[in-house]
Length: 145
Image 1 (cartoon, helix red, strand yellow):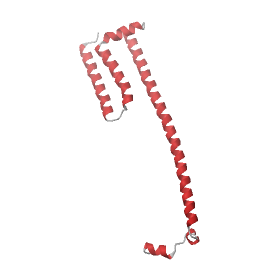
Image 2 (cartoon, rainbow, N blue to C red):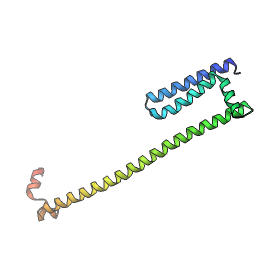
Image 3 (cartoon, rainbow, N blue to C red):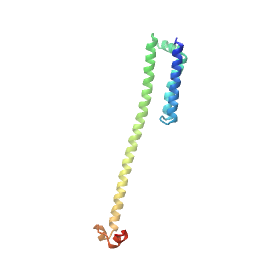
Image 4 (cartoon, one colour):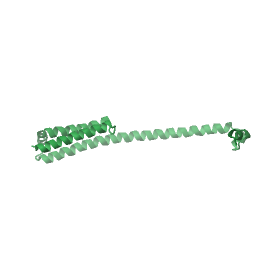
């Protein structure tokens, strides 16, 4: 049995946890689909704080004798699930970034090729005097020199 002061403290901590998660969601620091994972974690913590006997029953179903060992095993298992979910998300983001970088490289090469072809066409349309870099008198006069 959990002492009442500890239970109240843990309930306040879980409520603060939910407030922080919802604040991050409101500020768009977390995406909604990733926030669901953290909300699930908070819901499990909340249920276990309100009904601690549930934890004892779950631990005994798995054949664990000591409640603290069962709590540690459950915490480690839950952390591993969160870690795998976040690793999966990071892997998908890495693939998207790789694809975008490749597409940007292809587009950059295409832009350079187009710029080169435009410069070649402009060089072909210049008069022989303009091609050497000298300006004609009318060009100088237009600048007001």
